Length: 333
Image (cartoon, rainbow, N blue to C red; front, side):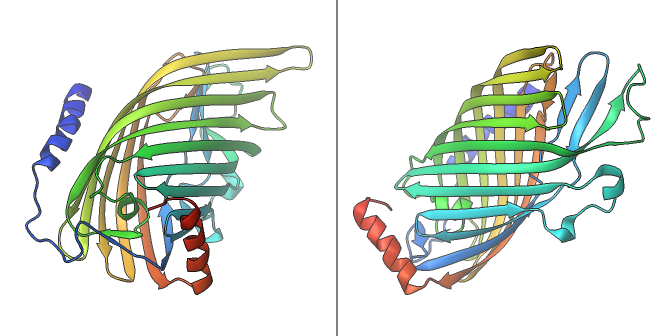
């Protein structure tokens, strides 16, 4: 089944290359929204859980929320995105599973055909569920253990390069451009980062470092003057270096688990564009092969749904002047 899935998606770039758009606009392939300030609101389910398995006892560590919101500001070559967990998304069962707080900040920089992303995210407040415990150490499986001080931190970066000048990163990722003609591009990328899972009241801490190199292809279909759809597929290879530290009163032990990973990222979205208003719905799939013998197991298959709505404003004069000065110092497009 997996081989059939991979073959179908490897054929996608060949299929989209054969497509031609017979209705071209008046702006060429890309219409930049120069001197505009984009403000975009998003909601998604990009929140990860973890599984522990020591061959006898197994359980899941989960945050008590499935949704996250974010607001982003885009101008010229820069995007700033802040994610958080608002009150209206808090779960009704916090007395059973506790509260979860989410914070994320992301910066994207566009330099000619390059795109550089930096991200910091923190999630605090988890609970233990899905317990399989033949030794009866944990409560009954229909009960939960609240971990209010358990905190995950992720610091990562991603470097991407597009080969086709007629394909817009900005139109696909932050809607600062409008793709006026159908176009696609081969997009290699390098992702690297650090992850930690710790609790000041626990005897165990997890730290993980990793990187992976992907070779992807993305294509934007321009359906008409205001509607578009995007498709992407990006397989990759990499390494993860995991360290689990157990600190008892009398002894401190470290267990290392280094593993080679293969992953597949897919992208599918549908969006609406006008001169001022834009909105869309996206679906990302992430599948990663991991060592079945690892004590800590991250999600191997994830589906992330993202909804966004935004508006383009005329940017203030002082903002334009500031960005113009930066562009004079650095050749940015």
